[in-house]
Length: 581
Image (cartoon, rainbow, N blue to C red):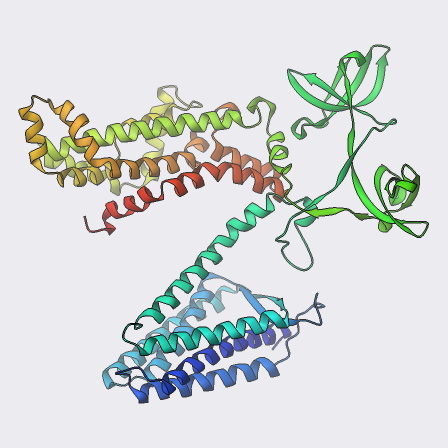
């Protein structure tokens, strides 16, 4: 067995041992403070099993060689071993099967009734067959299993705090379970803790994206793992006499450029440095139309004449040397000297690098006006899609729920049957129709279909309309209202929650729609944000901080919509059928 497998077995044994130890403590407290109606033999069996598993797990974790495969970044601290397996789906199913085999076997061993024992052992046998089947599939596929080893450094204070918290929580739940008023509270606490842990786990990717969007490129990778606290490098303005920068206007857009050469007494050849999307482009300009601007240079600390000084880098020399000018202390201010790059330490402070957001927009093509064209196209699609969906679906649903006409049931069944057609089946005919109409490379194919009602939304609104009492419609007819007036003034106000839910779903679908623009849009000026994100990833995907900043801006409206309209979003799930309507 290789060192990686020893580390994996030791890590899993350690985690199982600690979990079983907490379980042993909980069962011991239940034996000491029994709950009314509990079965002592069952608790005793569980205590023996949990204690045995804890002892075996901790013994294996402490005796197996735990070679990390590389030097530990914090050798003198406590370490919690972690491991991850990079393998195929069939191998993961086999792993889950092994866990379920042991779980059902243990449950069958500690079961009280013969029927429960047989059912648990039968389930264990079924899971054993599943494990063997998927395990054999994995072995025949030849897919390798890669083991990723790691450690979480933990101070003694944190270790004691976690242990104390586990003991206190176990004791509190055991004591609460003894009282009638506290029955079920321990389970509720465990459920809420599990939900909170799940929120943290599933929220980590979003947190990583948001934090990365404020990082500098030097913090994207680190030897010791992910850097969660971003830092910002200090800079200082410097007027470089040998390579000055100038601000100019090119095609009604302000740019920052450096002089390449002098073409004539009144003409210079300039190279653009900002914005980043135009970097490297050249243009000619008259010196009297240029405005000199300072260059932002990094601030560093170093030692000069036995003193620690703060300086700014004014020139990068060949061979890695740097020419710097001292800023502090005041007695040495403006003194210049040359030093090796390794002798300087960048001055950085904890903070957010907001510059990633304008920089990511600066990489977009100039004709997109820093992404405003993408935003405009997306807003057009979203607004028209929402309006079209609400109007068309509500009118059709009202007709199917309240009006009487020949073939009503058959037409409704045909409409529902369209939900069974896969999108791939209608993709080509729809494209041919829109191409025949000359709508390719326009926004029309993306929002016009919204004005032709969708089957699911019609079904949802029809069911909701049918729950409204007929007396409201009869009263409107007595007052002289037509079908259209009754629909607009009487029925629509009654289905506002359903309309809000459909509007939210339509908004999210239109905002995140990628397949539609991919098929129908060719020009950059007609692209929505979802397509622009994919193009940005293809061009700048290697610069994670810029990619995450662009992705954050793209998803921010949807995120805000969810937070401010989550009541209607959840109610929409209820109206879909999970709530019993």
